[in-house]
View (cartoon, rainbow, N blue to C red):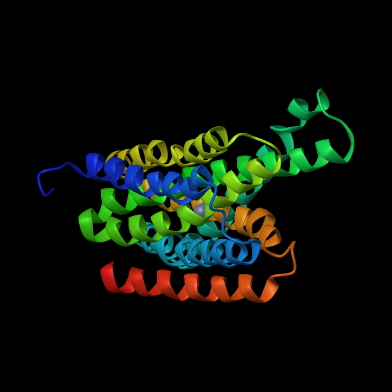
Length: 260
Ligand SMILES: [Zn+2]
C-alpha cells in the first residue's frame, strides 16, 4: 500500500467507498427490504455523516489551505463562503435543468409526479457522490493514508443507506429487483471519478484546493437539505431520522479526529 502513488490511493479509496452503495442496496436483490422506519433512521445517519464531513473534512481544510495564501483573515473566509454558495447553486441548477425534459413525455398525472420525485432523488444522490469522491481523493492526495482513510470510511458508511434508499424507491415504482439494484450501484460509481480528479487536482494545483473543497461542501450541503433530510421526514419518522443524524454526525466527527 505504501508504494502506491497518492493518485492511485485516491482512486482506490473512492472506488471502495463508492462500492458500498451497491452493498447497501443488496437487500433488494433478496427481497429483504428493511422497514421504512429503519430506512429513515439509516438515511438520517447518512445525512449526519455528510453534514459532519462537509465541515470537518472539507470546509475546515479549505480554510486551512486558503489562510497561508493571504495576509488577512477576511479573504480566506470570503473565498470559502463564495465557493460554498457556488457549490450549492450548481447542484440547484442541475436539479432544475436535468430531469424535466425527460418527464415531459411518457407517464402523466400523479404517477408521473411520483416517478419524477424518485428520479430527482436519484439524480441528486448521483450528483453529490461526485464531491464525496472528490473529498476522498483530496484526502488521500494531500494527506496520504492518514488524510484519506477517515473520509473513505465515513463516506463509505453513509453510501450504504443511500444505495438502499435509491434501490427501494425504484422497486416502489415497479422496477425489477436487478435493475433497481444496478441503478443504485451505478450512482456510487461516480465516486472513483471524483476521487481520481480530486487526487489529481491537489497533486497538480494547490491554489485551486480551497475553492474545490468548499465547492464540494456546498454541493453536499444542498443535497442534505434539499433531498436527504426531507426524504427521511416524509413518512412520520422524524424522531428516528434525527436520532440517525445525531449518531452519524458524532461518529464522523470522531473518525475524523481519531484517524485524521
Ligand atoms: Zn452522501
